[in-house]
Length: 232
Image (tube, rainbow, N blue to C red):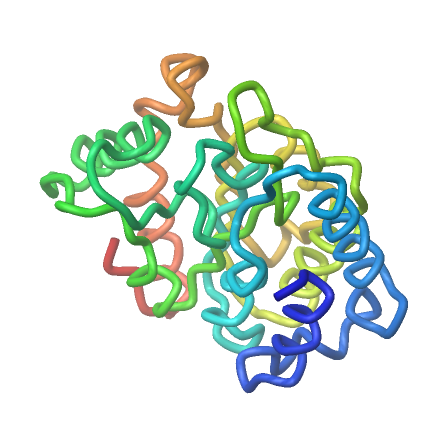
């Protein structure tokens, strides 16, 4: 399957409800152009993650009308086999990606919950947590992080974030890392909560991610707005 074909399949699916109306997903629009660029990368011999059928998984699992929290990362894991279309999520054998290990460490320190046995964050997405990356694809391989940040995905993620801010009443935005925090102006902070911190990567987690208590802060705010907290 190509990325262009995966986009068409996503837009025809029930999970695209709310998202397909965005200009980013119009024929020939930013999503189509980004997918064409991804397919050109593959045609040139590059291995791209995640698999095409998983590129839009975050949106499919968290329709616009259900979103109550957004975790915004940079781009998918570039390590072969790690990316599955949900920001920071991983389905595979141990060891877990180190960023996810750090997320689980902060979750344990924040909520007192032991780390889960696996890295699959689908359970969060099913509760309306949009696990979105600023770029939906990446070249696989060492030192390839950020390789698709200029393929046009930024316009797509901008529209997604702006739509959540515009259409949803009370959402917590967890912005982890510089590329995620650059999206902050798209969020109406008079209606939504922004929790910004360093990225959970081993290179930066100790510079503000650890100790940020994002999970308890998110739930406290959601409860204060009369919204159901997330079972993290």
